[in-house]
Image 1 (cartoon, rainbow, N blue to C red):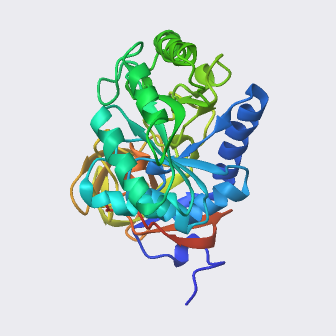
Image 2 (cartoon, rainbow, N blue to C red):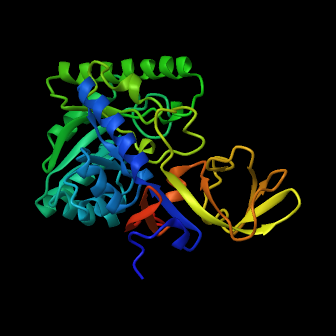
Image 3 (cartoon, rainbow, N blue to C red):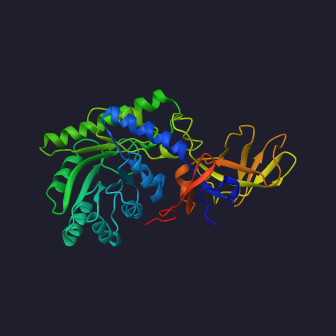
Length: 359
């Protein structure tokens, strides 16, 4: 039986749900703000992993995407997305042919922070007859990948510009370490410090005679501080589409569209148990919340169970609940399909093609 048009009670559980009305509002808010501030909004696919959702976002004004892994870029290309940034370093020799093949299909970009990787990419693109856009990644405080702001980026930009098969496109500076800072004033202040370093690096490269077409950064937690900042051309938020119960207090303007549909499987004196646990709801950022039920507290996740404490217990065995996870990105990675719903009925069923993949 087709699920299209069916009410939620027709679904088995657990199931990953996406509320399309909430997604529509989130997309409109972010894309309208991008237009008003004169920056491109490049939606981060690492949070989404679903080609059908990418197509939906494209149809609602989001034509450009970034991702974290090569397999995610391939899923995007298969979904018809033609402008893709892999916001990461691709260094494995086993991936070079895949990267070159993809660069011949779409406008593809990657990040680098080392001269040897530039030479490796150039060799692979020359051999395949492909052209790859390259951004130098700048470490503006996350202490993960990237060169330090300032002079270190200039020789890398020069090397890219001189490398056959490569095109120097600009800079990336992601402030992931700031995204969940609760105090907005502190988050803004630290974000602006990083932006000064990033755009200062842009000026050094331009002073060396190399055009910088793209300066990209930010996430859902810092988007409004970065969008419109002089010298930044685009922002790259992703979680704003789905949200979760940890991110929502930081960015309450975006609604939680992602939930896990679960069934009450046991009722005790002061708690009940749902049939979805840590294999369906990521707990790496903390406990989830029961949607619309603040008096019902999820207190423990085991592999196939969520314990929900409340007094009195307002449910019986067989009742349904929606669970808002604490981490949308990791929860999407646990599921193989998404049920897209509108006003309580199924509108689409989408495979989550990049979930569970690390290549």
